[in-house]
Length: 252
Ligand SMILES: Nc1nc2c(ncn2[C@@H]2O[C@H](COP(=O)(O)OP(=O)(O)OP(=O)(O)O)[C@@H](O)[C@H]2O)c(=O)[nH]1
Ligand SMILES: [Mg+2]
Image (cartoon, rainbow, N blue to C red; front, side, top):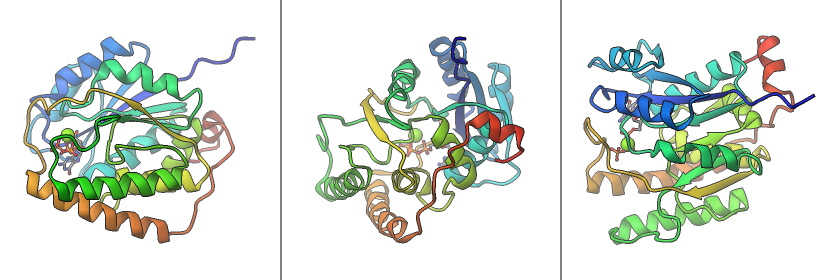
């Protein structure tokens, strides 16, 4: 008997992304037509949810704003309950190139998590020195923790295979910066295999950037602190059961 085809869910975190989210969903459907698309609307004040539904996505509306970590925790939990094997995070602002999703999913043949990395090979070009130092510290430390070369540790563009979906459904970090740094620390310390693939990230295609250059630098510095805190937390074991068995048992 042929092995079952992996069920894939694209989770799109979206906060006030009505300008870009429709095009993101259409690009996702064009790139991975067999995947389902769930937009998690983080209590937006605009009509993100209506635009997403009109573009053909399923929409989960959070009653209060939780930030990206809380959004992804909800997305992973829903994915696990519904028996999805693979989850790919694609931001609702159009920065993540949908055409690279199949390459990230293909990478799951050899890994539990595949990160779409912006700078692969050109780290730090045109970036101020404090940012470069912070990026270097993050990349070096997380590369050691994950035992592989990682260059873009704050990228949200990630594919997660069955073991990672189960782990993140139980414990996706929703605290400050948890969605990137802490999620990788958690996964690597649970014994999951993390890899990266180079992607051509774009400027956001609408809406408002969350950070200026100065704030982005401060954000990276704080990310280093968040990394130190993540490293002090106890390890969580990966759950060996397959995703569908978990869904049947009602465990998320
Ligand atoms: N800023 C922000 N984004 C959120 C929130 N909840 C969900 N998101 C979504 O999370 C994704 C990533 O947020 P961004 O603000 O684009 O973060 P970023 O890509 O690191 O920064 P930018 O360079 O400003 O795009 C986007 O799709 C947002 O719509 C929230 O509370 N605040
Ligand atoms: Mg963005």
